[in-house]
Length: 432
Ligand code: DLL
Image (cartoon, rainbow, N blue to C red; front, side, top):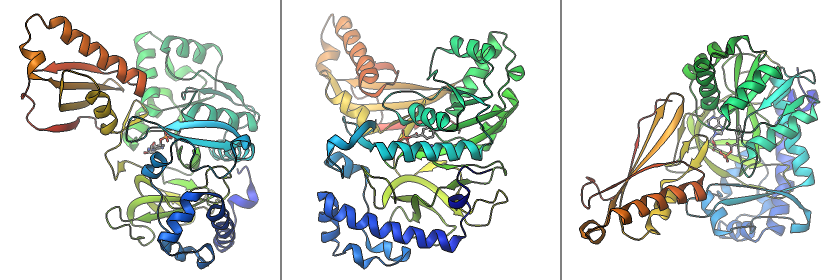
């Protein structure tokens, strides 16, 4: 079943022609409405009308997360603020988030994309959706919410956390669909088991999971624990949020990327060169229809491979394999994206610390844990009676990690020169 039959099942040559037409329109628009693009196209000596085909796209410069930071907060918007109806954010590589604006039409487009995704997962107006993606600045909660309303399903906007309440509602309201990060779903299954809740007997039949990498082994675990079909949903806030790609019900063979709205390319993350179709590389996205923050060749940092073989579901849109790797050092901890440089930015602001840290990520049960080991400086270490001072520093780190990044960290201060290396070291012990 499709939500928008005509666009989801277009012959490939028609999709390609539509993409070129829309690309030319968006290039014209950004060149004249966003200073950043005018400058970057001029620097690359390329004009919108030099682009006559998809393969000409390689002439266009990339845009990166750094460009969002350089234009913080609203410098990449292509419409006046009076046309923006919503703002969302994601992690930047420094202390500041990066910001995205949506016009009314953008929120409608986004809801349509989620509606398509839900329909691809076999969800209808008769379903009750337990939406445990976080509501707020993160795009997961509200993104799924409006798409679910669009198809007329009943949404429970539970958001994340409050495990016992989640379990109670799962039992009492009888949702047929659960949406969350895969690790939170597994965590709920574990908590349920500990509390004597029979997770398998819940009415849930489909799960839509995403926002973090998860393997087919994790999928098996979730499917077994809940007795459901678990599907992968992909998206990034810079581009629009969740709903850029989803698996259909035809198996575990990649997520359809909604190509009437996005062009996806695969590049070599080292050289920036476009790779032949089907090669593993970094995904680069161009938005064709978004109004407020159109992106031309955005480097996602996500490593995947495109699958062009026709799909039995009838959708003609290209598929992308599960994303299990990144081309940069971004970490996803409990569904929250974080760069080590953001943690470092917090630590360098606190007096008494040396710039030597260790970030250790692991799992307890299904949930990620974050430990920080930080060297104190010689002065703090040698000051007599400084235990109180040490506790104060520890508390400040814990608080700043929650306040700025939304992450709970266990902090251990260590003597100067005890961590082997200089700078930041990341030890990720998780198996995806
Ligand atoms: O995570 C949007 C989202 C919400 C997607 C709910 C799916 C479901 P950001 O916070 O901007 O947006 O994080 C985007 O998360 O570049 C990937 O590295 C990772 N990511 C998102 N979905 C998946 C997935 C949302 N299905 C970043 N598999 C992306 C693997 C994913 N990684």
